[in-house]
Length: 112
Image 1 (cartoon, rainbow, N blue to C red):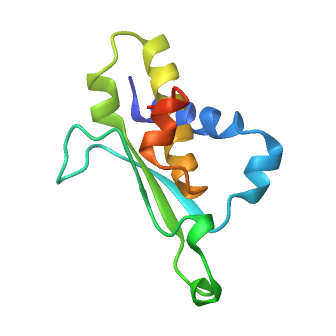
Image 2: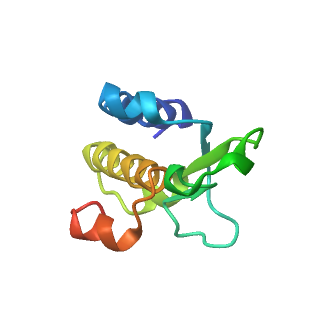
């Protein structure tokens, strides 16, 4: 799959977020990289301060980042349909972290 097509899938996944939630996403940039250098099998990573943990000291902070790792995702998928599904799951999973939802709760909800 071309990098351009993969970027489109990430954009499509972001477009699936309900408008009410999308409007609440604050100071976040979404990036696509090949792999995480420290954890090459990692599919996605949220780095920042979740909305539930922000206070007045957050003002003026650099944007939080959500990074989606293309090559790691492609490694776990057998078809383009699998990639579409896994990209959507990974994007939603990382956005959930932005809203303060931890991995245990995401697994309970089926978004592990």
